[in-house]
Image (cartoon, rainbow, N blue to C red; front, side, top):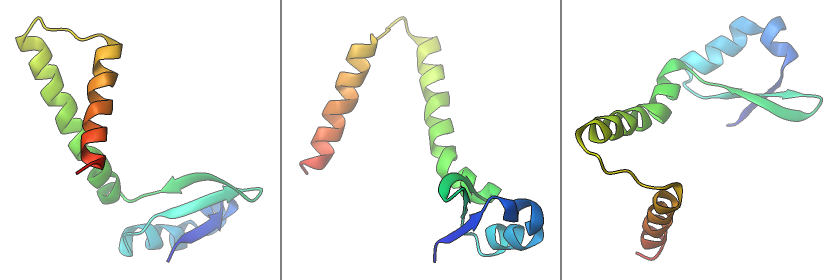
Length: 90
């Protein structure tokens, strides 16, 4: 179940929100004046979202150090778009 709370609950009911995020391992969406403003995640949830990205960036850095090949922005985005297109058409 999606947990949506007003941002004031972060100050007024922090222990309750903390328990929800950490123990149930589900994010809490915070609103201000009825509009979404932020999402609270546990460290584990955040790591699940970012670890693969960090690993890929480390691989890219290592590759960049080992070669003189450089791609333009247009080349990079063209390759990304073609890979996305290939996956969509599988």
